[in-house]
Length: 155
Image (cartoon, rainbow, N blue to C red):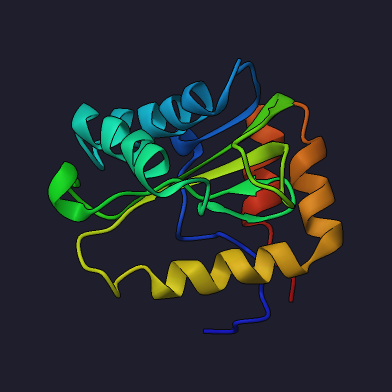
């Protein structure tokens, strides 16, 4: 695997992306990303609640970079198979993070094993390090353009 490639090709499907969604707060942003995972069969609705509860219990640790949140929860909270969803927000929302709020890019993931998501995390890190690609993702006007921005090979 080329860790410098910021493409999500093979990691995400068209039905797991949505652009410019409307969320009033961080809970709605997590719910939306979670619903994409549920719709794709990666997890149960319980997983959505577990992702929100993790933020309530542990704080906004999921806000990993300026404007980027990565909601997730433990596998036993309802993961059926590994999956990833990406959505951009029409209007950024606050998760309560001192340095990285507000969030406009939500990358939700479900994994069955604690270390099984490391390949996916490497791809996410590669994406976040590619400023031009992040800008393209954030500016995608619709889901098709967002999917294309995420999956287009960079190297």
